[in-house]
Length: 225
Ligand SMILES: C[S@@+](CC[C@H](N)C(=O)[O-])C[C@H]1O[C@@H](n2cnc3c(N)ncnc32)[C@H](O)[C@@H]1O
Picture 1 (cartoon, helix red, strand yellow):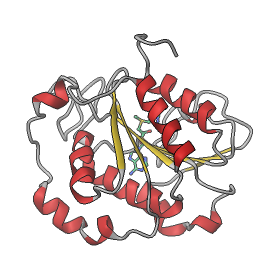
Picture 2: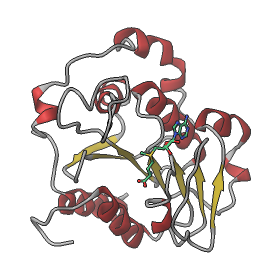
Picture 3: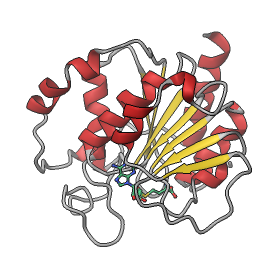
Picture 4: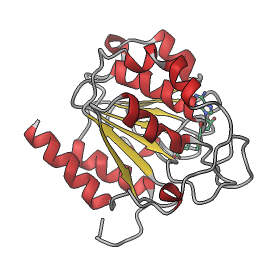
């Protein structure tokens, strides 16, 4: 991954797989399999309507389910791998779904795991609307970043300037934390489920770092943690 190159979310994920060498990978939102195929480790992809068109790794399984239903049926000891080290949240593009996905992932993961959200840097108001638009649609997943910063200041949270619509990297998890689940209704009261304008700092990516910087920070954290 060259400095200054346009880096897609899939480039970023692929590099993260190489860097972390995860023992297990969980993906919410599989669609055609373009991100799930990057996992050569034991992997589970969850999607109520998977349409996989590419060969997946030899240890990948697709679970045809909504993430909400999946999380009610599985605990960490039932995962088909030793540890959940890397997760990609790219399912329903509404922030309350992304929040529930994070709650579910954190419960299954461990303190050293890394979670990546897709679609946190919409490029305009239309693709950030809660009603799906034609073409690229981020929905309002961008709101997950301020929500996690407000309710979980203990997490490491980094916005990353990837193509086309940015990713959010979160680590320093606390699987036993119940803050987000306990405060879920309160969070939705603060952040009602309605369209709100995307702030200029999000549209212009003021707080997003280059992918190389995010990867270096993760490596520093892993080696000093
Ligand atoms: C943007 S696509 C995923 C793309 C894929 N991660 C990639 O990068 O190639 C979003 C997927 O989320 C799935 N999805 C929608 N609602 C979901 C839910 N409640 N739980 C899990 N997946 C969901 C859709 O069926 C769709 O296939």
